[in-house]
Amino acid sequence: MSKRDTVLRLENVARHYGDLVIVEEINFALRAGETVALLGPSGSGKSSLLHIAGLLETASAGEVHILGQPTSKLSDADRTHIRRNTLGFVYQFHHLLPEFSALGNVALPQLIAGIKKQEAEQEARRLLTLMGLGERVDHQPGQLSGGEQQRTAIARALSNRPDILLADEPTGNLDPKTSDVVFDALLNLVKTEGLAALIATHDQRLANRMDRIFVIRDQRLIEEQKQA
Ligand SMILES: Nc1ncnc2c1ncn2[C@@H]1O[C@H](COP(=O)(O)OP(=O)(O)OP(=O)(O)O)[C@@H](O)[C@H]1O
Image (cartoon, rainbow, N blue to C red; front, side, top):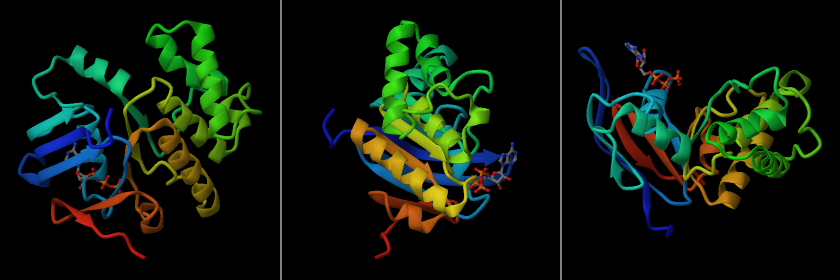
């Protein structure tokens, strides 16, 4: 994929709840390999937009294109297929399975996709090592620190080799110092693996580390200059 290619495009997207307009006239393109911050006050619609981009929710209007393909008329099965193969998700809370090791958690999406156990575990080990957890692969989530749990969740999101990472406050549950370390690891991994990432955050400082910044203001998505 060339760096110029658009991997995710939102075309005139709106989200309403009844008469309540959350966002509207959203036009946005995420290019291959770039990182974009999604800023906005609490309740402005960051999670809603990520859910729409991730095909977890349907837009009230407009179209979501993933790798050039319009998605609004696809079947649930086709949307699930795109979610599993093209998209990776990271949330504020890790949602790791407590009875599985870090390796097991990261390998699981691949096993579900039908990849052989040995191959899945090899890839899981590679990603965990890139996230600085090479010595922790056999630990269960309860034996990991908050930052390590979140790094495991990030490795899991990349386990199916997605093209696009969608992250909703991925370090929002961590103290500022740990947040910085985990965020650095996340951005390094995204760049190393050549992914595009759209990352919602409250934190202008973290947003400044990404290639471009967008903010939701008055229901619209606006590009903002990075602060020096
Ligand atoms: N099911 C729903 N019915 C009605 N309103 C909803 C529903 N789900 C979300 N909303 C509203 O949509 C708005 C946007 O919510 P969203 O979670 O996308 O915001 P956010 O920017 O991610 O906020 P935060 O930073 O606090 O997580 C909020 O005002 C919320 O109350």
